[in-house]
Amino acid sequence: MDFGLTEEQELLSKTARDFLTDNCPKSFVRQMEVDEKGYSPQLWKRMAELGWTGLLLPEEYGGTGGNWLDLIILLEEMGRALLPGPFVPTTVYVSPAILCYGTEEQKSGFLPGIASGKLVMTLALTEPSARYDETGIEVQARQEDGDWVIQGVKLFVPDAHVADWVICVARASEGVTLFLVDAKNPGVNCTVLDTIASDKQCEVLLNQVRVPHRNILGEVGKGWEIVERIKEWGALAQCALISGIVQQVLELTVSYAKERVQFDRPIGSFQAIGHKCANMAMDVEGVKYLTYQAAWRLSQGLPATVEVVMAKAWASQAVERVCLEGFWVHGGVGIAQDHDLPLYARRAKVAQFTLGDSYFHREIVSQQMGL
Image 1 (cartoon, helix red, strand yellow):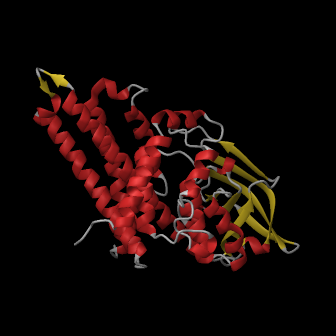
Image 2: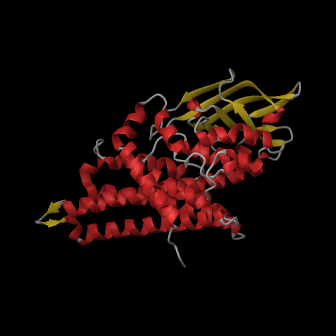
Image 3: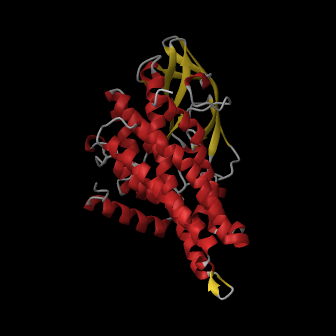
């Protein structure tokens, strides 16, 4: 089998790495952790000019007509650089959902803005129940004078504080329904939460938020079908970020093992250290293989549910193992807060649990096997 990238994909990977090396050093990542917005609008604009925000969108909506494999290649480089900001919520959770399920009015109204970098959007899915299944949706939506009124609380909504619009998953009497909500609506109140990665996840309070009927995404009562697709796309995106993270942690660790000398030899020459690095390398390749396999199937329009959940189940545990092995090899220097390793480990922990941990996805794999 040929696992090589096309010329265009090689160029995309190199361009992304060069751009992020120049524009997203670790000093910038740390700066964005304490920044009120958590991302740079100027950098966001430059990424849009490169076509990144419209990578999955067709040219008629201002996109570049790329596929999922292209996006995964880009996200892998973003994971390696720890790029902060609302890229995944906007381009993975929202734009393909509108493209696949939106009305023509919704597509023409939102997608060109996403592609040009003028719109930041996110998904409000999880609630205090912390469940990723349909029973976890308790935010209520009721009809009133032809509009819809939404009431409830959403938790861990990524970048909601800077979003222009939010896809809110709510429960109507007919069933789960998706609503395109103006984030500037006076009934929408966002609070940035303290998280291990300082990655700007928010609590969103929706107090009698009125939404016109035309802002329903898909059909009333059939929103969970769309959520399942978004979860699949989002889980794959997290795998790609994890792939970039573990590659960089491995490189940091191997470099340190070659440079650190004990008993007149590099510590990497000792079997205990060498085998730790070998274990890390095997986990890194496993994450990359499963992620690319799932992305290829999505790019070919093939069913990829099993491949995605297998990738996320493996990646969620592999990233934990790789980071722990990295700390073990580095020793005390690796836990210093000015070292890059803790920065990667904190971001890894978020990706590990976002849209389900390994146990959650293993359960889906077993169900797909008829167990």
